[in-house]
Length: 369
Image 1 (cartoon, rainbow, N blue to C red):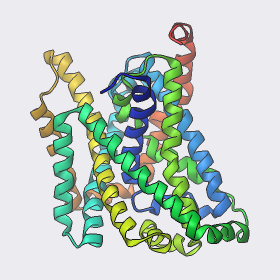
Image 2 (image 1 turned 180 degrees about the vertical axis):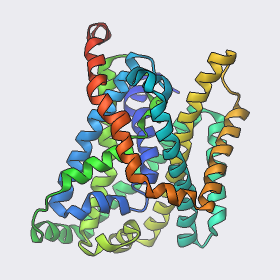
Image 3 (image 1 turned 90 degrees about the vertical axis):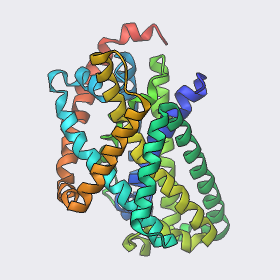
Image 4 (image 1 turned 180 degrees about the horizontal axis):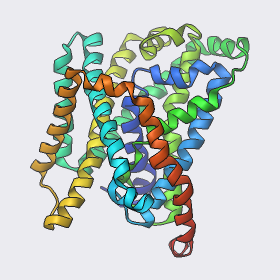
């Protein structure tokens, strides 16, 4: 991996964060409709602005805290932020990973079945294989694969924007002019940001290359803006079919059928499937970073590639098994509890004690600017 400023600061943090967030937050479009477009045309824009601002602060502060204290995996990060209470986040994130991995394998399989007629178990098995293989080859290959996936996504979005401008611009303008502004966009966007951002400490391996406070804040801002771009494009696209799109189970399918072409839908489904797999890859890479650090402290060496593959296989396999047993459904009912847990163990400490630590460390950090 190149050590250039462009790669370290602008590319790697943004692509890792978007790759992990996309599968769980954008793939079907249901989440964008739920937290953004359901607030109406202008209310949705307020949601996107709020989401962007929330991500900027959350990512920038987390990146700088990780850089300043050399805490690039979640245990060391929370030993700084929560001190003896670091294990509280581990309890929450284990539950979160079970949910995320189970959703990743199930949704990925379902997408291929609904669109291409491939049986669910085959799609889930393919995601399982992708996660194990990519984590076997390590963080560098994981980051490169994420960059390629995000590049493919943005090519799809560029084509979609062109199609919107050429064929659906009048419908979009009419939606904005015909529908009054709705309130509530700020509250839904903050919930959206926290639900996604709670996984960020698992992804701190993506900022190991940051050298200064300015780089950390720049990386946070760029990653935040990149992460909301799909939401912005999807929101405008959804407005071409508003308000019918709000009631659609798979809004992206509806949207591509309404404003784009069958070929673009096929391409998007493939890209979406890969990014759904990348969600699992990115989360497990954070778990491997934690295990490697523990192994180094205990035995002086990290896990081998085979060890990484074995942990990945166990994590994904366990999540699939738990999902078939119905345990994940039970956990999903406690999703609201997990959301508030993120607030308690991560968001509030970061914006209070975390800021205090950064201000206290300002003089030494300032020398690197």
